[in-house]
Image 1: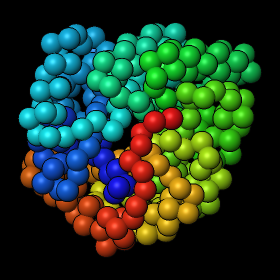
Image 2: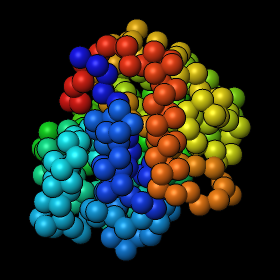
Image 3: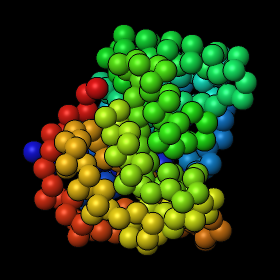
Length: 287
């Protein structure tokens, strides 16, 4: 079966999940990674969220209705909530895991967090194990973002995986963030080092200049060789979702919904040129 290509609903910026769910089919995508937001915390994208940690059954039913209406499936949920070092973040994360479970999702993406002192690091790992246990009880695997802190690069990811050794705590590898957050990072070598623990992938382009906010349509950044990334995944037998993440360029004019959608269309066209649509693997999104 074809590889599962998904689209993070954040790709549609201020137009949010409803626009993503209504549009991705016309870009050749049948799955979305649904962002579940935190009530009362403004989104950097400025959208009105369809789900937050405080949502109830009515909002969950509306998500199900939207997905059914547009024949779109969920590959995963993005439940980014802050630093799990904080107990409040753990509680928010658990509520979001409940929503993901209610929607039948088996994979979620969120941060591993950061800690400065040895004591805080011990607390953070204790909290992460608790999150892993809670996720496991719901048959969900929590996949760590490529973010500053424990999982900023392959070295940190390997140390974190070795210390946790938890079957429901794994990695989301982000091809753009690895360049954004690290000097002189090599996407392919970093991916190969951690591949055995990767259960979810964010496909994102970048210029390769650390700290430069430029995550537009694939092929425009030049920092990510999407053909080579596909070849690594094929060689390693990757079976998880590959979720597009397009976040725009700092300082650019505000885009219309159609312009936003066209970046997704252009990115899919680039993946097609790189052989992704002919690549075969299982669409499983299980741990």
